[in-house]
Image 1 (cartoon, protein in one colour):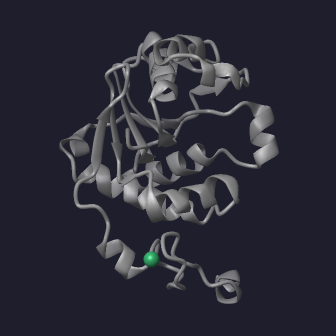
Image 2 (cartoon, helix red, strand yellow):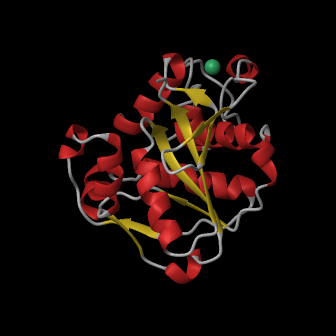
Image 3 (cartoon, helix red, strand yellow):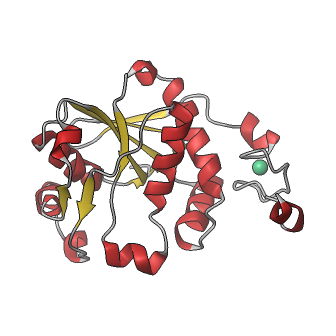
Length: 210
Ligand SMILES: [Zn+2]
């Protein structure tokens, strides 16, 4: 609270100063997309997103992801939940919420996993448990050179499930920051299903326009 007076929160989308209890300014909230985007990932899961990755939404995501503007997470999480509630999938009766993990090394370097902060916030807003059920064990960059199918297969080796007993028979919402090809979400979803997950839904802050 005290810090809010010294550094009043600014709207993640337009940088106007706003009240500390708001997640975005009123004019940006009024401009929230009426129709959330729903895409199908390569493994056939639903991915819901409030924004297309462009314009002010893309700028806000970049500030969050690369410039440490963690405050934006509050707004993104609220936008994701409102997007989910506008769809048919609002009644998806989730058992738990989790996120695409980072390697320990990468997380230490960055100081936080941007997908985890979103997932924890979304879990709170939806009144569902957040659980860390996946880990990423290997970092790699050369996946950019692989085709989509190859990338999914390849990526699967990077992720594993640390608590299959928590996943078995469950409906899981998997969070990430951005969906580009959907390969990462698909790799994680495959690991969850291999460990017995009944169904996996995905949600992200923004989907890259194809
Ligand atoms: Zn604004």
